[in-house]
Image (cartoon, rainbow, N blue to C red; front, side, top):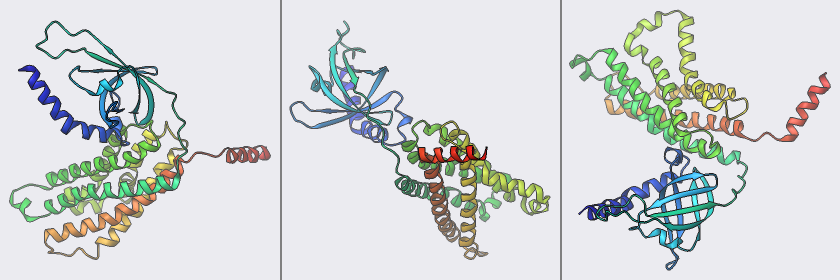
Length: 352
């Protein structure tokens, strides 16, 4: 009974879970799983077919240990030793695998915790290729545009909904409306952060997806909190001193860049440039959003039209911020040429 249930669960995992895990391990977001799970590629000994499966591993130096159930079949292709390929923490590696068998437990009615042990000796790692700035910019622009468009739909729909008369009939006040917008902004920040991390992790593996998304979400929440003040307080915000309004505007523009800078600063030179580039890109993008939406929004429009105009403005804003920040990140991550550094030192010595 137990073994039958185990085989059913194992089959469902193979059909439904493993393809999703294998796909994720092959993307720049692999670090959500890759600390303990690698994607192993084995060649079928008889069929010659390529077998790709996620496996849980332990690593000591250049040796990986994988424990498998005797009821599975993939490890049989490694009997006597065989070459394998792995996607290990986002890096393609080669190795040589051998199989040893542990004795099964006396209680044969249950699946043994031990069984088949696959030991993989990793080959020397191949040197990484130099990053291509143009390709990085294009990948960033595509991914961030799609991520920001998808993310911005959430606050756009939420904003149109809370502005509707139904909220007033339910007796829901401006504070709850503003809170709904801020929560929608957090969703936007998470989607945008994942889109940015998808590209950034491929170029800068030392940065984790969780850290980047956490910084992006926090920055988005701060920015949307500032943006929601007119909803909560109404026109009273306009009576505040100009210095306070300027500080709020600066907070709105720099919050995300500052928090992302904290993630970047230990990994790249002069990471402060990202704060300037990100803030400037959002300033231009918000201007584009205003230019697109202001002439189109009119009093008394139906909700669907308000949302459609907001999404149109969001697409224009997303493409703008993606292109500008993409150019910035490609420049910041570009390797510094030795000749440029030598020229700088010569100029400094000449001034002395």
